[in-house]
Amino acid sequence: MAGFRALPSVDQVLLSPMGRALIDAHGRTAVTGALRARLDAARAAIKGGEDGETEAARLPHLLAADLATAAQSRLRPMLNLTGTVLHTNLGRAILADEAIAAASAAMAAPLALEFDLDTGGRGQRDDHLRGLLCELTGAEDATIVNNNAAAVLIALNTFGQGRQAIVSRGELIEIGGAFRMPDIMARAGAQLVEVGTTNRTHPRDYQDAITPDTGLILKVHTSNYRIEGFTAEVPAPALAQIAKKAGVVLLNDLGSGSLVNLSAYGLRSEPTVAEAVAEGADLITFSGDKLLGGPQAGFVVGRRDLIARINRNPLKRALRLDKIRIAALEATLRLYRDPDRLAERLPTLRHLSRPQADIAAQAARLAPQVAALLPDYTVTATDCASQIGSGSLPTDTIPSAGLRITGAGGDAPDRLAASLRALPRPIVGHITGGALILDLRTLDRDGDLLDALSA
Ligand SMILES: *Cc1c(COP(=O)(O)O)cnc(C)c1O
Image 1 (spheres, rainbow, N blue to C red):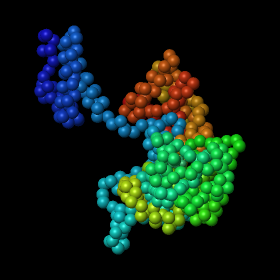
Image 2: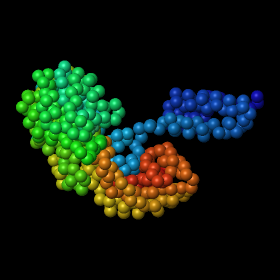
Image 3: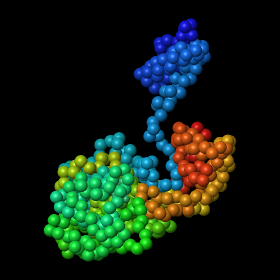
Image 4: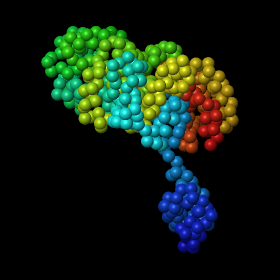
C-alpha cells in the first residue's frame, strides 16, 4: 500500500502556503473538515487501484473547489429572465433603491420604531405607514401584518370567530402554497357558508344566507384564474349595500391590490385599492410584494372602528412586521406621492411598463455579444411574452423580447439551463419550443447579463 504514502498529512496541508490561504478565506474549522473528507476520498480511491501520486496532485485543487462551493450561498443574487416579473419562487418584487437604503439604515442603527420623537413617549410601529396608506387609498385607517394571507386570517378571526362567513362558490380560491380560502376560514374559527354556484352568484344568494350568526361577507378577487362565459358576480357596491343593511362586515380580499391605475402604464387595469375603498367595502386586504412593489407585507385598510378591533386581536402581535420591512415599506409608499417618477424609481412598475421596442433593441444589441460567450450555441433575438406573475392578470401577456438560444442535441436547452443555474450569479429563463428563452424585460443593464455569463 505504498500509494497512501504519497498523500500529505492534515498538518502538512494546513501549514502549507495554500493551506494558510484557504484558512484565511474560509476559517480553520471548514478547511480541516473539507480536507479530512478529501483525504478519506483519496485513500478510498487508492485502495480501489488509483495511483497515489495522481491523487496527491489532485488534492489541493479539489479541496479549494469544495470550499468555494460550500462558501457560496444558495440565496445569492440571480438574474430573473423568466419573463415573469413578480416571480413568487424568486422572491417577488425587487425593491427600489430608496427602500433598500431605508432598510439598510434600519438594520444598522436604532430608530424610533415605537417611540414618539416629539414627546419622548411611546409610539406605535404602524404609525409610520398608516398616514401614507390612508393618503394613497382614501381609507380611514390601516393596519399592517406579515403578508396578505395574515391580513385575511386576522380579519376573518376578528369578525368571524364562532360566527358565519359568507363567500361565493366562484371565489373559494387556492393561491398556492397551501393557502386555500376554506382552510384559512377554518383556522380563523369562522364557519364557511358557501353561496351561489361556481359561475354565477346573485344578490339574493347573499341575502338569503344572512342570519343572526353572520359575522361577515367575504369577497375575494379571483386574481389567479378567470371564469369566462355564462357568469355573474355581485359587484362590490351592491354587496356593500347588502352588508350594510344586515349590519355585517364586508371584507374584500384584493390580493395584489395596485395603488395606481395600471392602464396609465399600458397594462390592463387591476382594481386599485382606492377604487375598492370607494366601492364601499368595510375592509380591504392586499399584499406588499405584488404590484405594490415593496417587501413582503399584508395590509388591511378600511373603517377606523373595525381596524381598531383588529389591532386589539392578540394575533396582531404574532403577525406584526419588523423594523426592516416597515422602513422599506415607508420608503416605497413615499415614492407613490410622486406619480410622475414612479415608473422610473419602482423596479416592478419600471419592468412592467417597459416598451417592447426598447426591449427588442436590447435583444438585438445583446444577441451577438452573448453568442460570443456561448460558442457552442446559436443565439438570436426573438419576440416573446412576459407576464406580471403572482396571480395578477393571469391570462394576460405583455409583448416582450429576448434571446432565443438553441444548440446541438435535443437536451441542449436543458443542459444550458443547468449550467446557467450553476453560475456564481445564476440566470434563469424558460424553455419553450426546443429553445431556452431569456426574456430581457427585467434586465436593467446589459452588463449584468454579460458579466454573469463571463464568470
Ligand atoms: C396573493 C394573494 C393572497 C396571499 O397574499 P400573500 O401576500 O402572498 O400572503 C391572498 N389572496 C389573494 C386574492 C391573492 O391574490
